[in-house]
Length: 158
Image 1 (cartoon, helix red, strand yellow):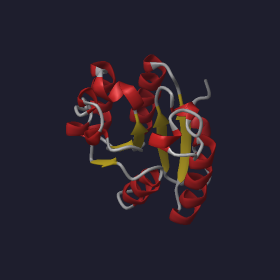
Image 2 (image 1 turned 30 degrees about the horizontal axis):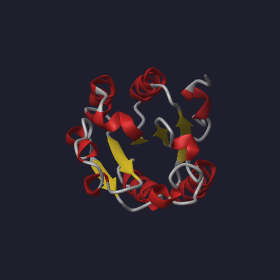
Image 3 (image 1 turned 90 degrees about the vertical axis):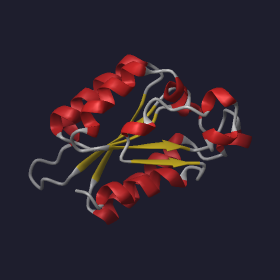
């Protein structure tokens, strides 16, 4: 695991935004393209890095299929006072532990929740998010453009 501190440019103090992707998002472009589209996670991250330069921020993009790893990264972001953009994938509907970790971010730099598909138009079990009530913003159903929307919003608060 690379420390988030490595993403901070100490000489210029450029604000950093942590972008987290949860389980199965490493399969973007391959898994259920009829739902999630053909764009890969690498494409999303490249677009975010380009946009971040325009906005004068740095993005640190990370993905894990493991809940505990995501929680560790949220804790690091809290320690550094970084805002978070998160697509928690299936953990949206199941993880009280991730919610508890993000509560610390919600009380500090804030976080935005992103979902590529409209979770409210899918299976009933996907309609509930344990995270949304704590989020500064929630973007659903806008495809991968939701990440850029969230980054634009977060950049206005830095």
